[in-house]
Length: 288
Image (cartoon, rainbow, N blue to C red; front, side, top):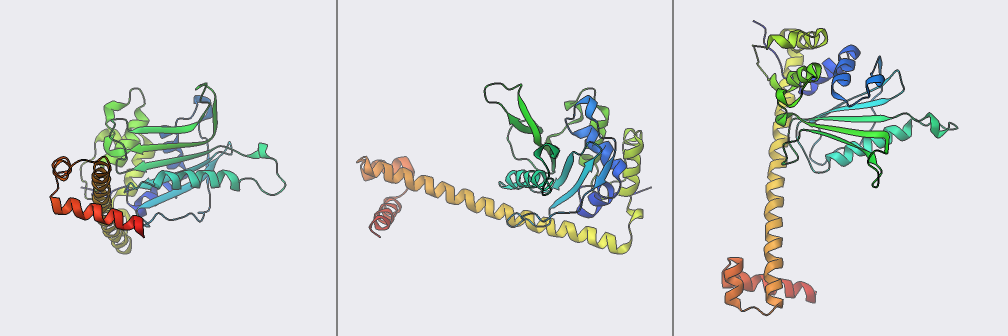
């Protein structure tokens, strides 16, 4: 029985989508909100570009870049850990790719659309919606859009097959990414029905990798795990700092309104000594 690797891992994701244009073409046609008459017919890979790194997040982002027969550019990113500035980085990448198309002496009419697709093994919203499509729209008339730069973000943990009706290929590709984990041995037969996904599954088999590649695969997960721990700690620290700041502001507002010490302590749920220290610290900072 075959054993499979996780397609979201850096080494595996690039092996599948960064070296097999037919698989990437099938995937993008299934996932991106392209008009029916604008499907991708062929792809050419682009050289990696220098992009800014996210703070404390250097190894859990994988990107594959390509352009199609219509001249459109695509940036595909696999993001294992959400950070607040990721969408800005993604917007920067797509905008920079859009600008770099225009060689010296050429006219703006030669610019082609750029699509940024981010597959997130994490969540960044509390809503149930898992598919997020961004493009520039007229604030007075939503039917008028500027489509040259578009972003698509997919929260894989929220995706469920019954979320989509009538788009079998989309469902199968997203199931391929979400359901197959490290060490998976049993694959739903429906995933083998599409030739491109069947080939991608073959590239997921442990037997397709040598010892050095498998070691690199494991090392990637170790790095990602460390980054997740680091970011989780920073997030918790940030939340604690935010709560302390809110509490201090509340105390000082009540103090300036002339509330009695006993009232401030009761509302803020702090001792008299704690309230006094907040007031003294605030007054001291104003003096300095």
